[in-house]
Length: 419
Image 1 (cartoon, rainbow, N blue to C red):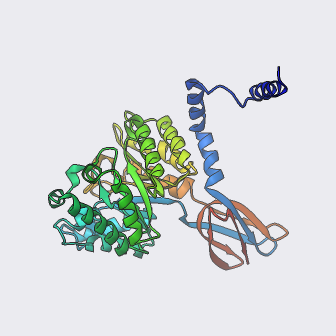
Image 2 (image 1 turned 135 degrees about the vertical axis):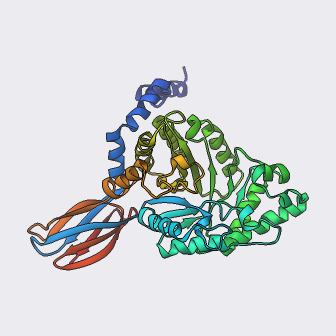
Image 3 (image 1 turned 60 degrees about the vertical axis):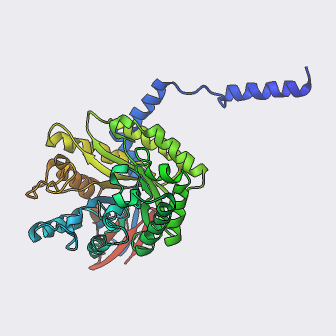
């Protein structure tokens, strides 16, 4: 036998012994790993690891220290109904409008237009463009320091395509698509710098069918022409619900877009409606693990929870929110509305028509403002130092009769405050 052959045999044997050519894990082994990962103690450990940092206070020896969180850095959001805008064609009674805005400001730090930014809303009639309701909703959010994302530049389903758009010939349609992408991102530049590019492409293909698959590139680059800083997301459903029936198709679609140069910046995962009959925690964790392969930001863009009764609905939120929050790639969890009176699926709403909070709303607030909220106090040691762990966000820190407002960020991992 040649020396080179002997060497190759030794290398291969070494690799096998070392486990480099280890057999793929069995289905049972993979399932066991998922179950271990979603165990409450494992989820809580990941949350503590990736959502919390160190707060170090330097003050006088034995001085009292009070630490109070006032805002989360993580984005807990909601879709906003168009009727909250006074410029919308249909507006709620002022009493309900005021209560809606009060609940919005007290419970959420992120938002998205439910329908006001969809093309059929902004240009219902050809060449008659109206951004007024969308602009007003944006202003209402600005007043409450709530950033807002864009949903959506295009919607691929035929039933949501305006009649006049469907009547255009190929050249006219392509021209209109490009103009729309540029106009929207340019209009909102610096105010909304993130959009769902072409919504629900697994289930709809109007634009690709009419203009070819390259139209997705054209949409994306036109959007970035209007705003070079815009971030573009894909967004689709049954990635978790319906037992993750479309996870494989979504993975393939994203892979193909990236291979073909579509500048995708993030992944939207719709999560409505999650019930004991339509999803499992294992389904959710498996989807997040698979999507993590793209190493891109993930946002749970459209969350709704359901069950046989209000208590079961609340329990679903308590199951899935921690799994989402514990994933390092997830940057936002967005409820698809919160008030039952004007809600896509009223039984899943967090507040009833009379504004009574449901058990789901109470479960939500307990997680966001209790379990995942830092409020503590103590006394500095003999060296004048007090140290604690806190969830990333904005804080008021008080010592020696003085208060400082500071930010503990995930990027920095820790903050030192001196008095």
